[in-house]
Length: 523
Image: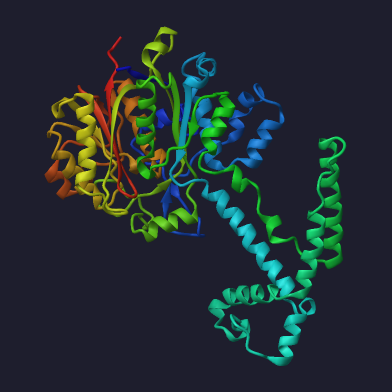
């Protein structure tokens, strides 16, 4: 079976604008979390990514026309920008890697996904649409522009579906009542129908079938704009709500980070977005290993990217009862009060070990050996006992590794009551000497990127012959958990134990990924 190495990596994370800052910060036991205040003052801590697309402008300007950078700024949402930044970083560890990925043609793939998608872009455009629709309905529901409403006010005849007048509704729900009232009467406005008839005539103008198509198309666009401006001036109406919906909602779908990386790197092989909630990075790694080991690819650019914390996600996690909300750091394996949301990205460049080392490239960190993946097929949030345990056994079996050969293990550990079950399940498989880490108290819980940060931290540590510290102090370890297992990494670095390293991720919906890795032989 072909062996696989990592030949480049990049990170965007809290307090870590790049992989170098990420590695430096791991040497400290401090948390990287900060106050959220996304609702105004609140009691949430989050992992806010440190990022500036301008850091990558020289790289982009050296390869693309000057308009490309501004296009990325205007059209690409934050998850895609984070992924682009992490990808550009990943080309720096091995000179010539960029050119090799291009030379491989269809044998270089891109698998970059997301846990949540570009929610900030969707939220922003949704709010623009809501406000535009509200203005539009209010305009056409005004009595002076709505003869149907004027007539009804004279007769007061019953109408099917007629909502209550806003003035008769309790003040707490008046906004919703106004929306319903205006929308109902805008839909009955003869004046709006007249406006739409005129607009239909404008939009019906097509490109003539004689002459040059390109110049004719431009002329038609110009003519439509001119007539639309006249129409708006005639009616003095606000912009139609469909004009308020930015096309960026299309350019930032789930596969956009992967497709943009393929364009930035001029990588022409298979490109798509694997999505598996909190286990996404492990699932992506499994697919990358499969592609290389089956000979379908020589290299895979693999990674995950998440938006920054925002009210939608913080509020959603809070009402799922899995987030801490007392303004204090909630560390895994302690009081089990909940996790902290984080955003950012991580990208690895994986390659066929024989192919890349023969060309002088050096592998980084550790060797990813195998990934065991399973589904609980049980509960939407709470992990089962059987699903994660089976993923661990599957990974160990596929790697041909006995439990006693595992030296260290990184938990999913979200600082919720599930931490206890996770440690208990692990001890059903692994012996008491395994050294355990849990890092979501450091950089928070990136839905898809978090597992990648944890693996990258594990790999960076082993590359230096140590395991980086965590924010956990020995006295803080939950007493019930300490009765199940006693060997954890606390707030001091320790030497990397002999043997392999494991990493478990458990995703929403019962999706599990267990990664087994081994150190490279010392030179």
